[in-house]
Image (cartoon, rainbow, N blue to C red; front, side, top):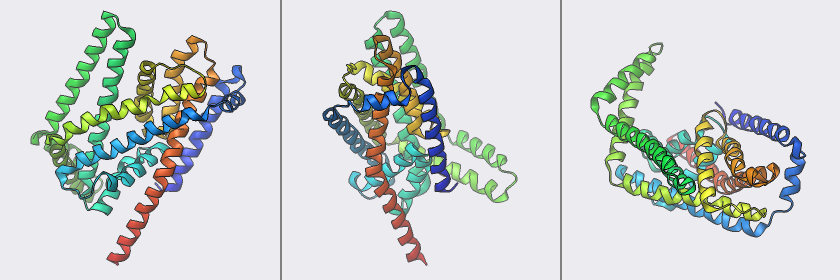
Length: 337
């Protein structure tokens, strides 16, 4: 699919979200209510929110550098920063998780790391994101609700998710399981002889690279980096609430934002992740604030401010990154020709 198609889908999705938001806020005055709220924003409180965003993305580059160390990838977190930010930018503005595919491709072109190695590092990063957000949701839910029944329920859910992660790690390290998966995928591509031969090889290479990155001690360091990374990102709502005169406790900010980021990124297969996050955040944050008498327009404005921070930040950082990736690829083609 061409990049124009991705951006067209993103624009259409954004238009649909605007229409939905207008209809949902008709009792409050529609989108005009949000515009009136945004005119009252205290810009001072946006500065620490942008600061948390920037620090979190520096930690993202450090974490990815940790995951790539077993593959002897050259460079440092500063060199990898444009690649990872460019990939996240694509995921945020277009559907089908395009950035997760573009990131290992750019890594191969710029650093010479094979595609399956970069892809396995990106997949493990997404798993660590999910694990970290789940941990934050469980811990902060326990701190918020505090009853014995709720504590046990969240511990059981966390235990089931933990068992699923362990089972995945054990299976991916099994040669029999990888061979079985390769044969199944090879049979699914029977109409194409070339794909029937190439797909099993790709799966085996990807599984081998996944085993390499999982068995390295660097994956443990990456997990330890993931938790503070997401605490910084989910704490932004505290300052965004202050910008609009709304008191959002840190526990509520981290809990509601973690749920919205999990739901938004999961829906990124069908929608741009940015739109998915906005939808889920409007629901999760609204559940807490509207019961406290906060108008729905203010809740939507806070969620919109969070989305604007990502859009502005990723645009400032991501567009030059994508442009530099494109220039590097064109230079490589010229050298080969």
